[in-house]
Image 1 (cartoon, helix red, strand yellow):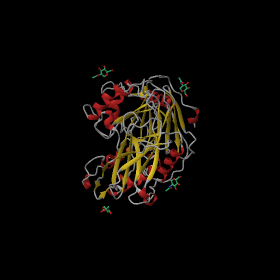
Image 2 (image 1 turned 90 degrees about the vertical axis):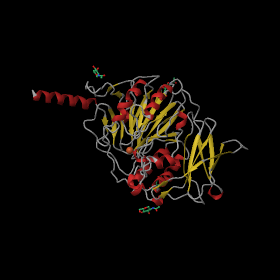
Image 3 (image 1 turned 90 degrees about the horizontal axis):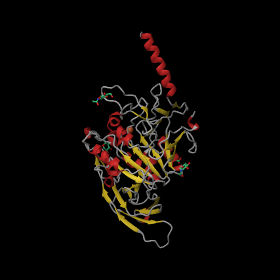
Image 4 (image 1 turned 45 degrees about the vertical axis):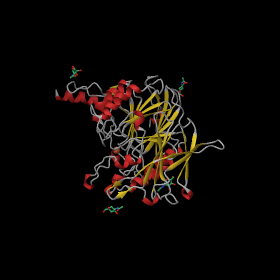
Length: 462
Ligand SMILES: *[C@@H]1O[C@H](CO)[C@@H](O)[C@H](O)[C@H]1NC(C)=O
Ligand SMILES: *[C@@H]1O[C@H](CO)[C@@H](O)[C@H](O)[C@H]1NC(C)=O
Ligand SMILES: *[C@@H]1O[C@H](CO)[C@@H](O)[C@H](O)[C@H]1NC(C)=O
Ligand SMILES: *[C@@H]1O[C@H](CO)[C@@H](O)[C@H](O)[C@H]1NC(C)=O
Ligand SMILES: [Fe+2]
């Protein structure tokens, strides 16, 4: 009897690994991930020169931008001057920032400025200037097109970046990709908490490190566990203190009560950002907000429904295995009912893409806890492979579960090119290749307008 059971189990296992996806056998050089030294990130020249410049969307529809920066010595000037490119004799506009600073144990931050500039024209390059006299610095960005169902738009996706030599390669590769217009960042920014007393100087160096991208295109922020900075041993009791002081998001525009969860519309996408490290049980603020948020999504206006959160719900790596499970239990049925197209997560320092599957039938007595194919389900992408100091998560569960379509322990980033209401092209780029090389790709079909089954392209058949 027992041997028959074993035999059946064996058969099941073989079947399982046959249905399963691809575990890439790409062989990479395993180098230690080391933080770049502090001297790599000097302050810009000039008295009180503005630094750590970063921008993000400033309202719900993309006509406003939050410009944030830091000045080390003096609170003033705390204004930004901006004007649309191209026209002669343009009137220059000025906006005043809200200025703040914070203390973290014995660290005192510089002056942190957040200026929201409003009523911008769509699809327009704007220049902006910060600082004064010899310390004036000029940057520019392009506003998105007006929200609409067939507006093409290209997003980059990155997570768990940190500030190592590998992080530098990830960022440089991303910047060299000229297509991406906005970054969807899935959390874990600076890894300052890797240092004794969570040395907040490492928040400053991170701000300088990423400026060459964050000053020129919006980064849509998600909070990860390395943003919590909760350290009672030194009386630091306020979770997310450095993160929330430095990175502002337009949460009020989506009726959220916390910067840790919010939504924006951009081009043809509706993007919902959730917090894996804030309460999400029934009756909590995040739960109530999300419950009211889904009915507001109009797929005739924004066909692409994308969710960003830090801790993945579907992850077949041994690292952080099932850490996202309790949130999945709370929210997955809503994702299926509302036909979310894509969920991007970080946290696990490797890359993985799932098939469209769901696991919402289970209750505590029925035993039905196996993910099944579901055409209404999102594709889940784990992209925590930015290159931080903790290194790669290179131990996958075996056999590869049937929900996992492709997985590989390499650093990299992804690009999502939305073409129209039905089609989007998704690619993943590993650091050890040149940027144009695609290590995983898929034509994604919109769940509302064209809910057909997708087929992995040949390029990932390694
Ligand atoms: C903060 O305290 C630590 C440990 O005592 C010390 O090494 C560091 O230099 C101090 N930093 C500042 C800015 O005073
Ligand atoms: C980071 O990358 C850039 C561009 O490739 C390179 O010039 C720079 O030297 C790198 N920084 C470090 C510390 O390796
Ligand atoms: C659990 O699922 C089983 C089988 O689908 C069903 O019969 C039962 O009513 C469910 N229990 C509850 C409390 O919903
Ligand atoms: C949408 O984009 C895809 C991919 O570029 C294209 O094949 C398709 O024809 C487009 N649909 C429409 C209605 O233009
Ligand atoms: Fe994380």
